[in-house]
Amino acid sequence: MSNTVNLGASGDGVYIVQQGKVVEVLEPKEYGQDSIQWQHGKVFEVSESKRRRVGSIKK
Image 1 (cartoon, one colour):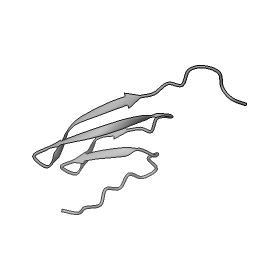
Image 2: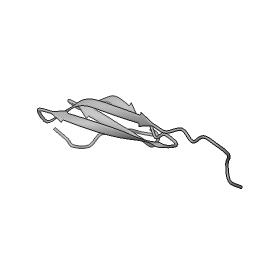
Image 3: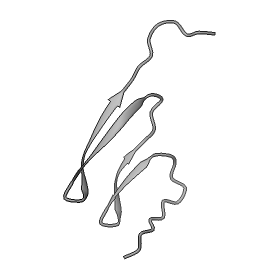
Image 4: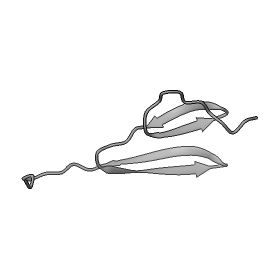
């Protein structure tokens, strides 16, 4: 089995591959944090956090 996955013209992000197939794409956010949990050597769960800026924007 090859360790190479051809994503073609896919954009930025984190691609979770299981058994040679892309099963999840985590796309970049303006602000935030994602945490990946592993179980038995495979991705089990993804926790996503999102930030939102409030208040006035400095110029």
